[in-house]
Image (tube, rainbow, N blue to C red; front, side):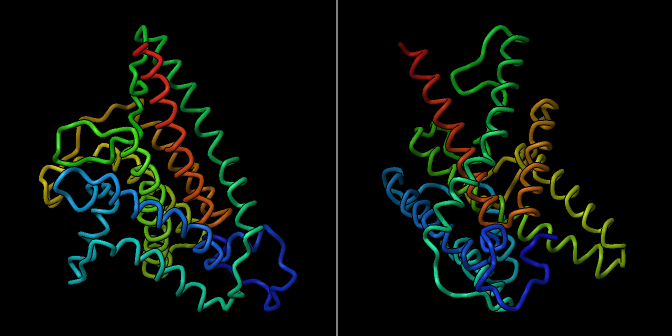
Length: 283
């Protein structure tokens, strides 16, 4: 499991960057600008007559899951992030003081983690271009942000996609890593009594497959109640599998805050890359 769930020295005053960057409360402080940016962005970019942009798919799935428990609310997914990380902090009893210098270095590390995935994506796009004779302005076959599905058939602006990028980083990691790995680990190890190494590996594999399939899931109604699975493109599926495993590795090694930062920065780079290609193609 992640370093956040492991035991650590009682005296944390002399903890180094590697450990402090994984503390749940520091992760929450680190992610708070993203949470605020996403919520403001969904309001600012709202279509005419709407209160906010449609929720991304991970946000909708989280909302539906808690709706079955009788808990609803527009801002429920954001509240879940705050509550979960706060509870983890209370259990661990880490220091309360925010560390701005720590957070600045965490952004540098998150950017460093996002770069290999972005370079890998560019290599795949180039190979796709060579095989098909060109790459579309939307970035070829990857369509990383296609998970921001809604019933509205009109195309999203690149500003909308930047907002979706932030939301995808937060809520996909919440769904598949923080919640998914923890629940599956509990099921496999605590309930089914599998050895730790097999239970942990199983949790990672299952959530990685689910993460890849998730990117082919589409909402079939405006209420986000119905979903359908589009035909699998095995090249994209392989990319999402590798991306999911890579992000799971970051989560296990470096904690929730940094994997969210890396995921969000990667998606922002993809949107920016695709927009630059589209503008260059337009002349």
